Image (cartoon, rainbow, N blue to C red; front, side):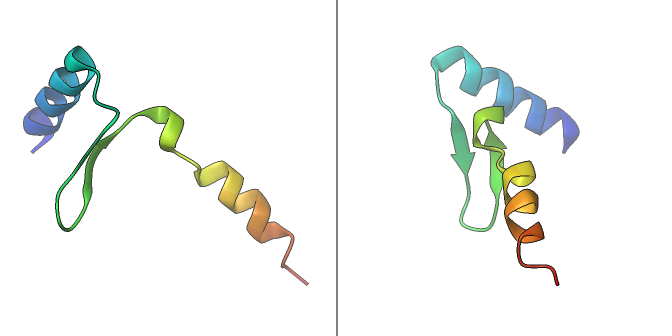
Length: 48
């Protein structure tokens, strides 16, 4: 699966696609779409 993901990422980057999804998961997403840190900071505001 690691080799498949690398090839998908390489091909996507080559042709300018930012994200590849299937019906269940994101197969590849450009780093610009990773909002994990922003979500964590946002959620910290709800902690008591």
